[in-house]
Length: 76
Image 1 (cartoon, one colour):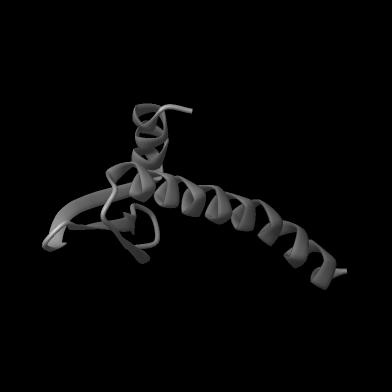
Image 2 (cartoon, one colour; image 1 turned 180 degrees about the vertical axis):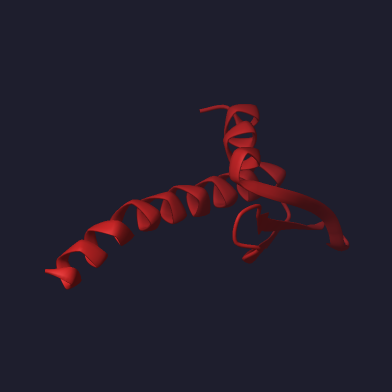
């Protein structure tokens, strides 16, 4: 999947900030638009940061999908 496609998917759920933390070290900060939860990643490669952010997006979506199932089981 292309980085632009990953970035568009990430932007549906997160506000992003991209900054240069140190020489040749980029920082990607992601803020969830709905919960305000923050997550940050550091790396020298833009592509790696986008991949890390996309992986975090997939994990959070999977956790959101599994959460209602846990609540239903505990209610029974």
